[in-house]
Image (cartoon, rainbow, N blue to C red):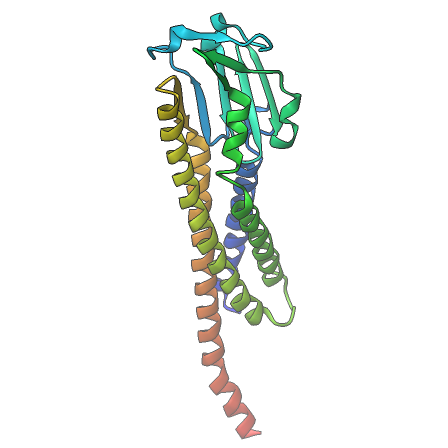
Length: 251
């Protein structure tokens, strides 16, 4: 194997590992109160104090919040969890454990607005299936890459070709997943604001978006690196094949 190909695969292993870590943080966003997770969210919404309906808000009889503290309340939504900021308090949980949260419903004229139920509805719009599939393919590719840097093992060229196909499927899958994520977030932002008559102020998570497209860029680099490794290996084999044939004829 050419030296440059060995070096490129070693660098690719590092890049693939970083991409795996980034995608894992994106998946586990809002699952824990640690800033490493609570700051990775897709959507953040809170009450808009400039709305004409803001003065008509009142807490429900069984609600855990009061109308005087609405400005301190915000909800962050991730792929697998939800974080609630209420003043100095921060609580995060998974979608399966949302019933453990206290009631956060608000009365608006004759209707109720349940903030927790609103967060749960988003999970059906932006499901982590594609993200989970991408992480699985990324781990499979990482195993193949680690195999390629082990000295004196058979079938490296075949593993490189298989890994090139795996990385191509991976960037296609996460490219689609990134675009669907972006569209789901943009659509939800508009729908939540319009359906609440501008009562909710919605913003997207900058860190989650940065992780999404950084991971996609790293996966693209890995695919190009595998194509380069296959090309250099093919050229190396083609260059050494005639000399091997000549030595055989001389014998």
